[in-house]
Structure formats: structure tokens, C-alpha cells
Image (cartoon, rainbow, N blue to C red; front, side, top):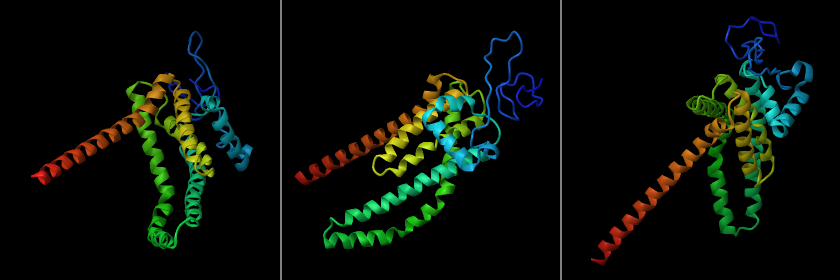
Length: 254
């Protein structure tokens, strides 16, 4: 059996070509849908160019995500999507750091002399934060793999992972496009978070050709689970504080 898109030989029963990532054309008599996948503009930089490939990929992921992920190859290597995520992710994070510094400086104009002195000492001591900034690219790579692994695990639980881990990783990398919204101060971060979650939901659905419910479970359940743990921890902490207060008041009244 041969792939109708790239001509390479593939194993019988495969859903996607391991060479080009295209969905294999079904045999005659099969009722499975046929759908070709092609390189993203970023992965086709030899023809589109670096800048144009980056621009077109950003445009497609942000404004026509369903169509983009429906055509995105689910194989072909991790390097290109990872490089895209690093370029876009680091651009957004650098602006996030810059806004944090600039907005801190703007607030100093409203402080008293005592507060300015205290802030100055805090900022001087905060030079230690330069180390995490330098480590950001490495932390971003680790974050991409952790998120991909977690999403793929939940997809596997619901039997929605049909294309392998590489497809999930590619979705996560290209879903970093909204990081550019961090160029906007204050509201950029929440917009980015909501947009990323939307792209992940649509991307997993199209890349794995699964249902929206399974994709939503994989994306939202970890978030809801973490929020639940935080609320439980907060409730336990408040309960411990209340119990301690009652104990101290009881001893004081004696």
C-alpha cells in the first residue's frame, strides 16, 4: 500500500502516512472519509519564506484554527513546530517581562519618598529574577512537553487519541500563537489564556479526528481539577486558621 500524496510505502491499516503526515486515502468500498493534509506555511518555508511562513501560520491559527488543524500534518518531526513555539512564545514573554518592569516604574511616580526607597531595595533584591528570565526558553520547552503529555494522556483515557503523541505536541506548539497578545498590557494575559485554550480544544479535535466532547475533556478537566485542588487546599487552610483562632480565644478567656 502506498500513500497517494507522497508515494511512500505505508503499512496496511495505518490512518496517517508516517512520512508526510497525510491521511491515507481509503480503499474502494470503504466509508471512511478522505482528507489530505499538507505542510503548514511555517513548515514549507522553502517556498513561502521565513517571514511569510510565520505570518501566514499566525494568521491561520488565530483566525481559522479549525481549518488549519484539519490540514496540519500529524507527523513530520517536532523541530519545526517547536521552533515556531519558541519564537512566538519568547516574543510574548519578553513583552510580558517588559510591561512588568515599565508599569512598576510608572507606579513609582505616585509613591512617597519612603515607598520609593523601599521599592528600590526590592527591585535591587529582585535582580535574582534575571536567572529565571535566562532560563525561560528551557522552561518553555519543558512546559510544552508536559502540557502535551498531559493532554495526550486525557485523550487516551477517553479513547480520543487516534494520531499519536506527535499530533498532540504539534497542536500545543501551534496553539502558542496567542502569546503575541501579551504585547498588550493588562488585558493581554487573560486574552491569551482564553485563546490558547480555544485553540487547544479545536486543535485536538481536528488533529486526532475525535469528538468535541473528548477534546474538551482533555483540555478542561486538568484546569478544573487544579482549581478544585486549590479550592480544597484553601478551605483546609481557612479551617485550620479558624480552629487555631478558636483555640487561642478559649485559652485567652481562661
